[in-house]
Image (cartoon, rainbow, N blue to C red; front, side):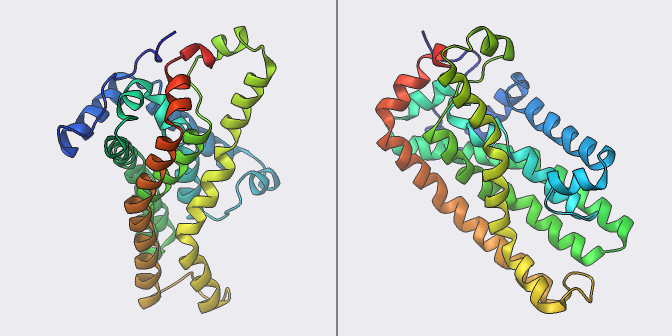
Length: 274
């Protein structure tokens, strides 16, 4: 009985955003297995799948195709894992401490969102710029890189809703196998591991939808993506949607967690519930 090992044991929201963000980044650095390695492994899986798989298998696994689309797929897969979809259970002690105070819980979600954005956004944006230079698509590459740089700010707080409704404790696979029964719990965990790879790309597509729609409307496939004012407009619309999500989603998730506070506290306080 007790909260998951390796958690902070302290709710954020009382010492200033900058101090809490630094504390969260230090937590991530101390416990790379919980966050950093999940991001690295997902990134490596995308690279391996993109480079090694046959074209047909790659098209089945990755909806978006084309060299510059690699950066988008890389970011969505890096976001489709424990750090963004299960942040409350991933730092159970801090969450339990924050549950009685909705403002502190909202603050905790924002801190975790920014910490992940700092880790993921620059990597995907840099990959996009490199590909764009190699392809000679400078304007489109810069526009997409800007969107990828800020995309985690919108995706992460919305994706956190999955872990708020159905959290799970980060436990080693050996523990999962040893405690595979009752099977209902194991099946639940398996579904929650796979679900983010469906949920997160859908959320991401919503934010880049202006670019997709205006791209189809403007050139009908006859020119290279978007240009001029269209690039500025689509990039601005995507960034505006992301900003709105960053402003509103943590409130919604904190409200949802507040309504489920009793159940969440009972679950997060017992690491043996898996």
